[in-house]
Image (cartoon, rainbow, N blue to C red; front, side):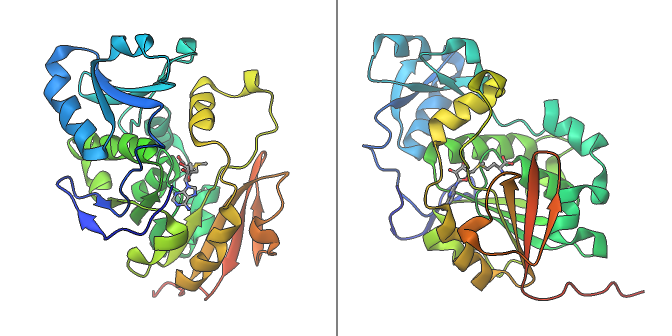
Length: 287
Ligand SMILES: C[S@@+](CC[C@H](N)C(=O)[O-])C[C@H]1O[C@@H](n2cnc3c(N)ncnc32)[C@H](O)[C@@H]1O
């Protein structure tokens, strides 16, 4: 998937370091649900180099397609064509679970905040080098951190970019989204495109133990799209070389540490844990 082509900036401020490989995208196309979105959908297909199919309903007549990215009332959504009951996934920082967590999630006392070092009264610049749908990054951004997000899969990066751009237009979360910059690139090769982060945060995909029925519908679409990040061990070394203060790795409780490297400390939760690798002690707050 990754290739080292020249870095370029495109209109919506996303840094695009990879050109999408067309073979990898042959099972996915982009279209619109309502024709009012047709021009926008066409522009987006061009920007991300997806096959444009016009009316998203026509996807069902194309057996080679597994997924459809559809522009639905100015929101980009992803559907799995052979499992329509799973519904659609989109990135929404304004409403739903992410918004609920922003309002009631425990602020700087929550585990992810402790893991990146926020409890010390320190607000780091965090590189989320496996950004996915940006939920963890948004939690940290809403606690005041500056976030650089890196995502290598064009479909995921397109969904995330759409969510960030919509959030920027919202009164409540616009300021938070302004602090989130997305780079579409593989962080194994291109991590240093992010300017000297204080903390590198990693949450690569790990094989799930739960039976598929127990996994939330949204997660099932995401898992079938992304698969497992089999090269995830390769993230730790560049992360440790880049992070000023620490690297934080989110792991399922049953998983071994990334690259089998023992962390400096771990924060254990019910299903997951944060492994923290300390490069340098976080500065004490000045009083
Ligand atoms: C489990 S998801 C991350 C979920 C994210 N923490 C969230 O809160 O939404 C892992 C993501 O990392 C991405 N990824 C894995 N390895 C990567 C790499 N080397 N460079 C960039 N993205 C990567 C995958 O494509 C996937 O979207």
